Length: 352
Image (cartoon, one colour):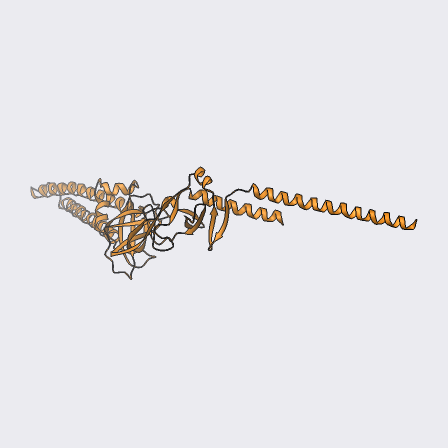
């Protein structure tokens, strides 16, 4: 009887172990199925790093749907340049000179009119005094003194006008001074209406350069704009050391803006390639471009900023002619890269 009870107890224990094992197998199979299902439905766009470069994977189908286009880089040559710096000039000092000049001219006109009247009075008194002394000597002398005083005022007002002109030349040079004081000057009017801006560009001391007739400028990481030489500046920039020149540009840069200028240097040419602006994405204050590694992989590379050009950047390193860069849809790739990184981080947290 005791043996029969022992046998039943063993069988019950074995049955219980089998049930527990079956439940454990079912749980693990279910977990594996969930993981398989999640990876099976995962988006084909992924972010990773290849050879130390941020890389994003986008299927050819997704590229076509998003309008992502690539274009091979072409070998080109680039004239070497010297970098200079400058400032967009304030117009108020020029306006003040013009106002003072107009007031000084008005003083001359007033002094001349007064002198003409006092001269006539003096001549009348002098004539009357000479003819039988119809006026007193004292009255004639008073009229003479008034005339002499008014003549002196003409001289003083004229000297003031000359001083204002000389002071303007000391600060701005002859061409600008001519613009300031010429009535109806169209050049000066274009500066007042901000159709043009005036810049003082300072050439580096270490470079033996002749100021070019045309240079190119950038500010705020914008594309280049041309500027035309006006004249040498009699004064240098208080911050920068070097020979300064005035240039005019058709660009709405704000007064006081610090400008980077690019001056062509001799006939030296650099060899490299050109990254168009359509390929540029900005991240962390740095321009980047996506290079296609194969049919569905794109690597993000930093674009050197030392040679910005009209419509993009000239580069002599990092990028090579023949490499395919994304010229349309680069911003979409940047967004996809970071959204994929975020998703990967969230899934890693779920697995933990």
